[in-house]
Image 1 (cartoon, helix red, strand yellow):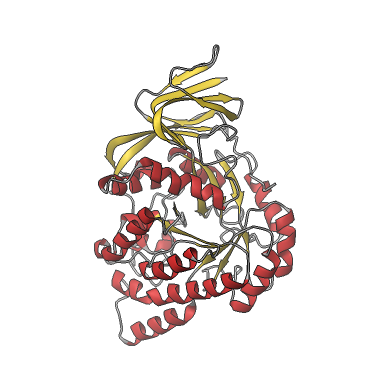
Image 2 (cartoon, rainbow, N blue to C red):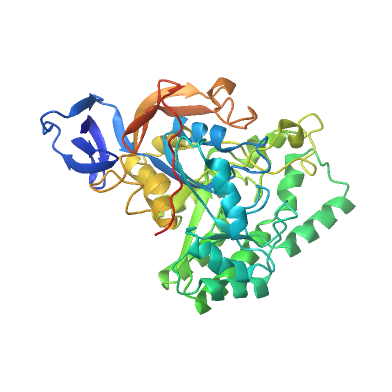
Length: 450
C-alpha cells in the first residue's frame, strides 16, 4: 500500500489537500490529507500539484513499419516525461496500416516490452474495408479513424460519403466512435490551382495556409453532421483548426447529436502571424491559422464547445521536413510535440486565468471518455488505475532541444516559453519518470475494450 499526498490534489471535486491511497495498481481511496493508513509508504509532495495521468488520444507512433519515424519506445518515453500515462495510436502511419485484424496483431507484437505507458490503437476506416470492421471490434479496439481527404499515406485511402455510410452501418449500435479528419478535397484543389496560377511562393507560410482554406473543414463537418442525423454512432472531429465551424457544431450538439470535438496544442500555442517563411516544422493539416482564430478556439474551450486537447504528435525523419529547402508544399505535414503539451498549453491558459481543473478535464478526463477508458483512466478516483503526474505549475522555462524525448529533435516548440514542469510520472502505482530520468523497465500494457 502507498499513499500520495499534497496540499494540492486535483480530485474530481476540485483541488484540495488530500491523500491518494493506492493498493497495488489501483486507487483504493482519496482521503483527508492526514488520513494515512498504518504501514502505507508515504510520498509527500508538499505544495506540488498531484494530478491524474494525462490521456492523449491522437498520437502517431508509426510502429511497426516506420519505426525510424518514432516507435513505441521513444513515443512512450516522451509521453511519460510530460505526465501522459495513456496513448491511443492512429492507424495510418504504420506498415501495415491498422485496417484489419492481422495488422492489429502485428502492432501488438511490435509493442511488446517497449511501452513505458499504457496504450491502445484506433482501427482505420478506408475505402473497401467495411467488412473488416466487425473483426476489429471483436479484437477490442476502442473506435475508428478515417480521412475525408488524402491522408498522405497511399495505403490509408480517404473515404467519400458512400464509404462513410458503409462504415457507420457497421458501427451503428456498438457505441464506438468514428474519428474523422474533417477536410474535403474540393476547396483544397481549387485553392492549390489558384495559388499555382499566381506563382505563389511555396516557401511562404501564407501560401501553405491559403492552400488549406477553412471551407475544406466546413464542408467536411457539414457532411459529418448530416450523417449524425441518421446514425446513432458517436462522431468525433479531430484537430479542429477553424473557428468558423464552431457555430454549426454548437447547434448540432445543442440538438443532442452525438458529436465531440478536439483541438490540438499547436493551434493554441502558435499563430500564423508568428510563423517564419520556410519554417516547415510548423506544417500540419489543417494548418495553424491566425491569432483571431486562435482566440476563438480558446474561448470555445472555456465555453464548453470544444471537448478536449490532444497533440496530434506526427513526427518524421528530419529530412522529410525539407527544412533546408523551406518548401511547405514538399515537406511532411505533422508537428512533433509529445510530452510538451501540458506546460505549453498551461502557459497560455494560466495567463487567461483558466484553472488546472479545466486542463485536467481537457487533457485527461474527456480523452479517456472518448476512448472508453473513463472507468479506469483520467481521474484520481477510487477504482481507477494509479496513474499520477506530479506537476509544479509555477515553474517557468524555455523548451530546448534537450527537453525533447521523442526520436527526432525537430519541433516548433523549441524556444517556446512554457509554464509548469512534470516532476514525476507514475503508471499503475509504479514510478516511471522522475527528475528527467526513467525508472525500471517498460511495463505499459495495451488497453483492450471489454
